[in-house]
Image (cartoon, rainbow, N blue to C red):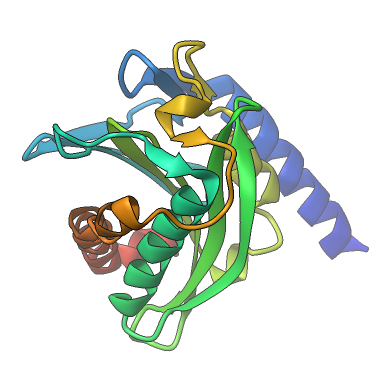
Length: 219
């Protein structure tokens, strides 16, 4: 009973705490997310990385511009395959990481995104979970990540949900910023674009490696 009461208290504290210190941060003029006070930003070759410590987890957001001559994908299936390629690349570079619970989700009720969990080992036998949401537009790819150790699995739900749910998009972003047609099937013209996300994968992996070096702060 004491454990149940403690868990409930921690969950309420997480939700209340996040609401109190969650601050809307503009990633650009089109996408906003709430981050705890004291968040940090870093610009690397045109990419912007936002990071912050929550009560139970670590939050990272990557805003990476796509190639200047990039265009919206033709079909929803092209978008689906592009995001699957990103996920496969992230798993392939995560040294034995396991991708779980891959699913489709909507941002702002109109833009399609992929959500999944990456389970990794910190090198000392401790399991680390990383909740990902990938959002692709023809101009920018956004990666949202919430990281926490296995021993906090029971208490991170509210904070991680509040973090992801705080993603808001401008009315200027519409479906045709992602793909143009409702037709099904894979468009040959876009096969090259689908596998052009290597830069994003390398950037995400770099963040994973840097975070791994600082892992003790997760406790």
